[in-house]
Image 1 (cartoon, rainbow, N blue to C red):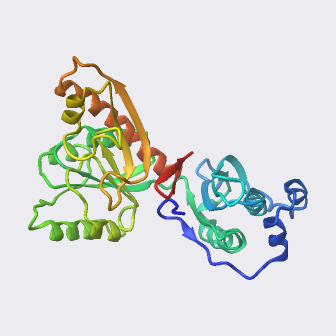
Image 2: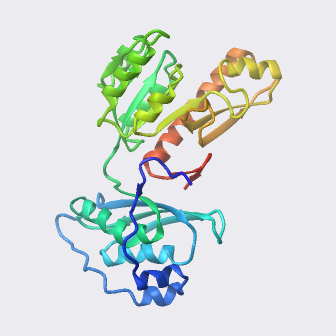
Image 3: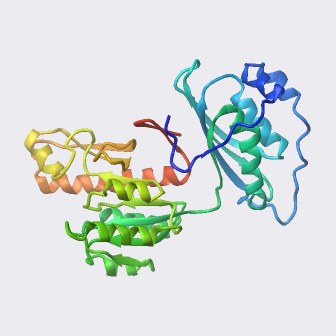
Length: 332
């Protein structure tokens, strides 16, 4: 099982008889009824809507997982405000959980909370997990070439507060959009790329990104990232493909679509992997077209879909709604 990038894997601690009883399938209701009293919730000036945390977990399914997670949060004085779960199968399947909780003073407790969860819950379950402060925006780098529609849409949505992210920089292999990006007050890095300079260009990109971003978004970046770049970037990479994958992969999808006489065109946002346009799909959408549609009309309609699909995918990722399961995703 492959989980969403950034999930932490906990080392299994020494066996705990009480924990084993939960894993073995002890009834949920008696377990919850026997939980120790919760830490009293603190109130005062430090409380704010910002004290919201997100917890995502993935592990092999089995009885008692929800009881473990909710019990841990209860003992810590947290109140669960939203929870989603999915299992690929009740016996030997893969279990995925996304929980939002309120905990006064979360920011000050986050590191201790993560360590405790690793020891008390994730370790016994051999689970991967991530705990985040929802108030902390995802730091993002946008990669683009010459097409501006996805880039400007993301910058506009970010400025309006529609996306929980902070655009740290824009990287482009062309200088065409430098003035547009400057209007948003975002740093613009022009790094030309050719066959002869690709390795050096990618190294320069990696140097700019290191310890600076949590996510890279390819907003119509018309260069293929090498396996070396993807293995070293150390953050997820989301790509928008101007086609409804798996159809019409590669270059000129709208010309391919016109030549095939399609009645639907679409766009696909997916995580980038070494296999071109075959990474786990996050979001897709389509629009109806007809034989009367020209390539230019298909392209205009496609650009609208690309904008909305990429914005949704980026938003869901930044809200910790996407977990990767092999070649597929669970999108809560």
